[in-house]
Image (tube, rainbow over all chains, first blue to last red):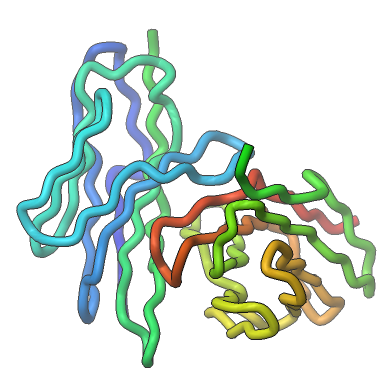
Length: 112
Length: 112
């Protein structure tokens, strides 16, 4: 069974305190890995797509990396506005099609 | 502005009642999706559609129905057969199947 596990479930940081979120996966065939940001009561917002081990993507204070078994979302010098739930999803084959398997998310709180 | 519009934001269902959640997109996307989000769980796929007049069941389709009569619209009906409908429902669209998803702002459904 395809599984996506995100850790930690929740993370509290002080403003400026860098850290990383983890997304590990056990899937039959990874086609792509997606990171989304979700604010309370809103829909997720796309951040990054990674397709192959060694790939990295950056956007402002966020950098996503991918290995054969996991992905990291690094947050450098976070600000309170980075507080949100970060979702990871992997794209896997299903029959003659493909589907996304989502993790449960990491809730990030950045205190001023 | 292009995007996905979900309505209503909040919805209450009485025992034995069917309710319909609206989803409209003006992104000219072919694929549309419905996800259910419960606290502490990953997003779960209810139904998806790759083209007008065609749709497929996702992982948790029981108790739900959809239609895709227009490219822009993908309404979801929560039927009385769905015994635990309380959840946050998210509609999404993409250019093609399982490209990056664009999400609406969600509908919170509760049972009276």
